[in-house]
Amino acid sequence: MELLLFVLALETPAVVALLDCVNREPAEFPGGAQDQREWRRWLILGVLTAWFLVGNAVVLAYYFVVVKGSGRS
Image 1: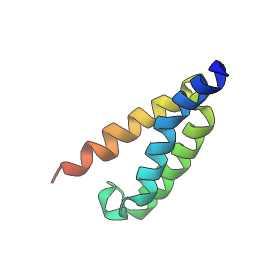
Image 2: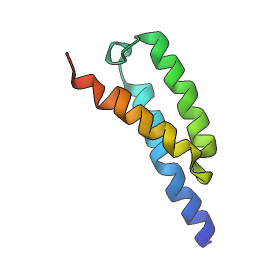
Image 3: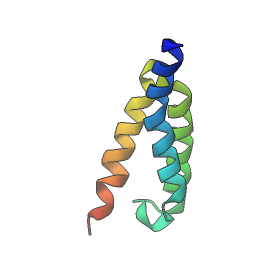
């Protein structure tokens, strides 16, 4: 049971980032709709690999490129 909770805790940030990517407008991505599709693919891979910490690197990259970068002019 503890292992299941641990894996769920590792998956949660990747799932939330994927939901954020799906709900953002394409104009909020540096490359528009094409960039959104590419990030969606990467984040799906991140969800699948988050339980052994590879996917968390994808989530961090998404955060710094899209979320932090969306406030720029």
